[in-house]
Length: 82
Image (cartoon, rainbow, N blue to C red; front, side, top):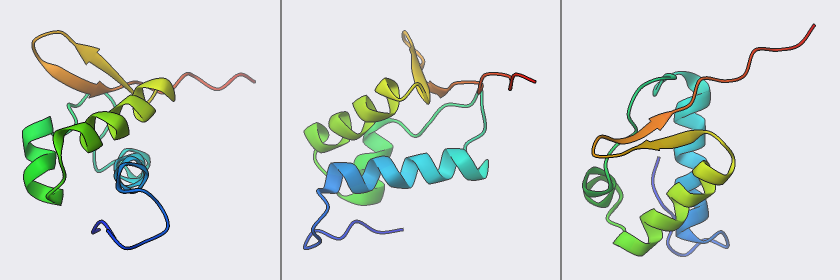
């Protein structure tokens, strides 16, 4: 997926959606690291602040969590209640 710089949706929101879809599809499974800020900068040609804003959305949603010195990892989804 590409970022549409001329689209109505801000680039950081587009990036958050791309990463959200990668997590939901299992492309980035639970317990695995999401691409680093540098990797995302290269892949999407976005600035550091744009990437930070996208990642903060995923943190707020509980999809990723920081592991100090290691990066951001996809959180295991909670078990469904019966």
